[in-house]
Image 1 (cartoon, rainbow, N blue to C red):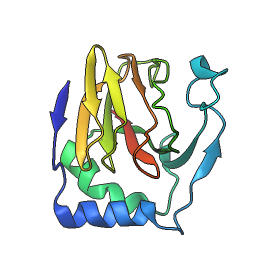
Image 2 (image 1 turned 135 degrees about the horizontal axis):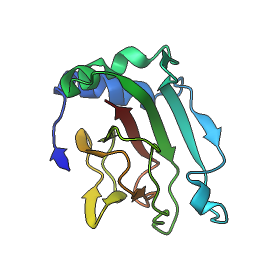
Image 3 (image 1 turned 120 degrees about the vertical axis):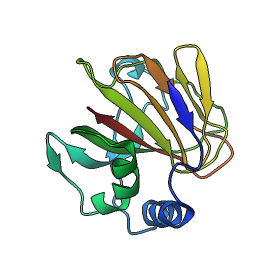
Image 4 (image 1 turned 90 degrees about the vertical axis):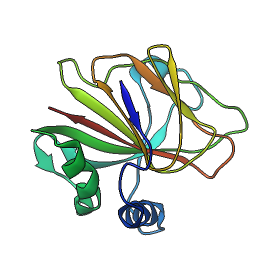
Length: 159
């Protein structure tokens, strides 16, 4: 696992953050975060698929180019943004894996908040413009947040 702060330049970060935080960016309701969290009251999120099934699926894909180019991916599998609404209580969701096959994963943090990601036994705090790289078959989990309007991350699966 590797963690990098200030992953992309400030102008690219501001453009990405402002774009997906705007009132015109299309977020879509997803009624579950993970199949293991089925009975949990906070088991929902809003998502935006940038890349799926070998196809760019979003007109907003270009805002990710500074990240995609810097990570030097040979091939993309999936890129999906997650927006988790806040609650009064910080909720840690069940661990899951992103893919059933070997590939790489990265979680890019769009905003700073009191949410976090657990990978193995390590807790990675949500810090704007931070990225963490790990193997996609490694169990991990995330949280919501309590100190902001939402927790936004972008999940990359790639080779």
